Amino acid sequence: MTPALELKGLRKSFGKAEIIRGIDLSIGKAERHAVIGPNGAGKSTLFNLITARFPPTEGTVKLHGQDLTGMQPFQINRLGLSRSFQITNIFPKMTVFENVRCALLWSQGYKYSFWHMVNRKRDLTEGAEAILEQINLTERRNLPAGVLSYAEQRALEIGITIAGGADVVMLDEPTAGMSNSETDYITDLILKVTEGKTLIMVEHDMGVVFGLADRISVLVYGEIIATGKPEDVRADPRVQEAYLGAALEAEH
Image (cartoon, rainbow, N blue to C red):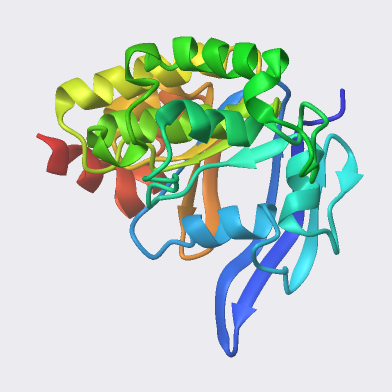
């Protein structure tokens, strides 16, 4: 079966500094895959390579078997891959509903149509309402997005991420900076909205990682030192030495 996402020989250098050093990784359809590693390991750079924010120095990225070399981020998005960012990326002065509706425009076929009155488009309204229900923000629909709590803003960004119908969803540290209750809220939300989709996430909270991921890849100094099921990665001496032991100890 063709993987949802496949990386082969992926490398990225900035001048003489090699940040990503030859990554090979295959992620299956509907798999939940976590990428973990210490600060500076190259996790965000890897996300930026996959989504074409950075061009690779070497190697290829394939989405459902299609080579993404030379494509722009918006083209990759339209092929079915969408991502969130470490820093919340919403329109704070628009309402919660309007944020989601904007994210639906292209997938609903409106593209750059300036002559459509979006308020009169039932398909857009119904689609946005359905996503608001999924992310538990229906009661906040008419509030400016900027007044939402931090966790609610992250939930809104996840809603925006899935609004285009992407079947591969990438989340960059979705629970960063959250309390335990907020983390539980977002974790449950991710489980719900990514059901049947391929999920790739960078996350530092090991409770979230082991609760969500089918497989885990450990990235250290730009190289993947281990990939496997959570229990196998947890027991791997290389991972414990390089990262996991310290991370788990820090949480306690």
